[in-house]
Length: 108
Image (tube, rainbow, N blue to C red; front, top):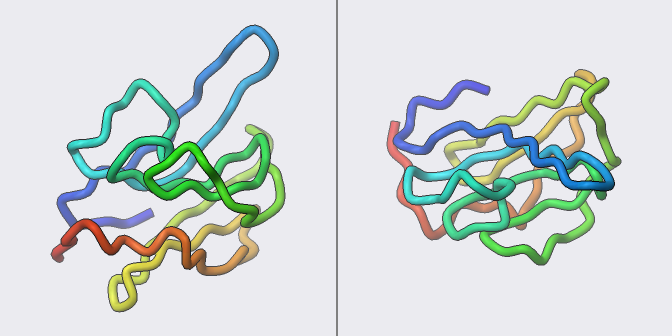
């Protein structure tokens, strides 16, 4: 991912007693780092355990296939529309309209 804006890139891994969760996405400097991206205000992400996208809330929406640490996940942003997109193993999953960054001004 290439980002020259004041947002921060974030890839988080949390573990519990049952499984690992992986979330790939974006967050502003205001977003806390102790939970997966997308669950907190000013963060947006695609999660591997369920294939859901999350936009500033713990309530996700179906987005793409599940993924694991064996997959290569890419993420990017279309600065013209403010929407994020993801790839899995080099294949475009598609733009996710739930990840439109409308609440945060991002500048180049």
